Length: 209
Image (cartoon, rainbow, N blue to C red; front, side, top):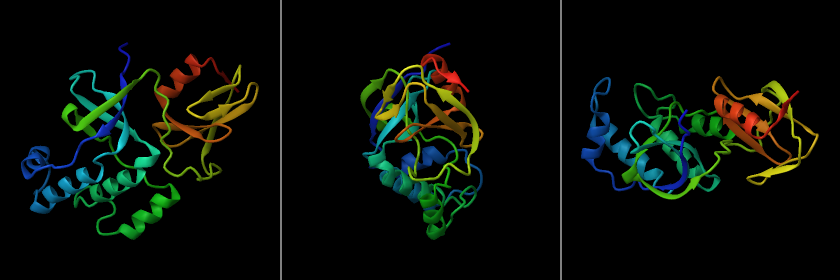
């Protein structure tokens, strides 16, 4: 199986034009208006300069999916999400920023789909050898309401991206949704896709309890 390549990068999505917007909306469902074009330009400008984790499209080698936004770019991501939610067909918070802010602050907001960008829209900073990323939007969110899936035990003390695990301790893994799980460390969380969690368990030689 081909190993996915992942990168830390800066988004270069400012200065979009009407022509860029028209190309994006080509073949879309429903009537596309000038407001839709303007919204696309605004939301792409909102994330211009954001630091992100990307995964390369193995088929084309020219496109990337945005896996997560760095903590210092979450405000940009939040504004992008709100603008994207203004879509009259698929948006859930049209003209309702108050409800959006409420759900975001509570950690209940989930962006649908994955943002895709091209090579011309990113500045690659470095390639990530092993993808371990923190997707949690609200670090203070209590996991009590999450479904506990299992515990894992580390065979040796480890520190990964600043998150600490002690040898012999049990660390809970919660269900985030159908596609992601949350692994709790001593001082923070990791959010992994189900498939990536399987890889982590194998590569880190963890014991499931």
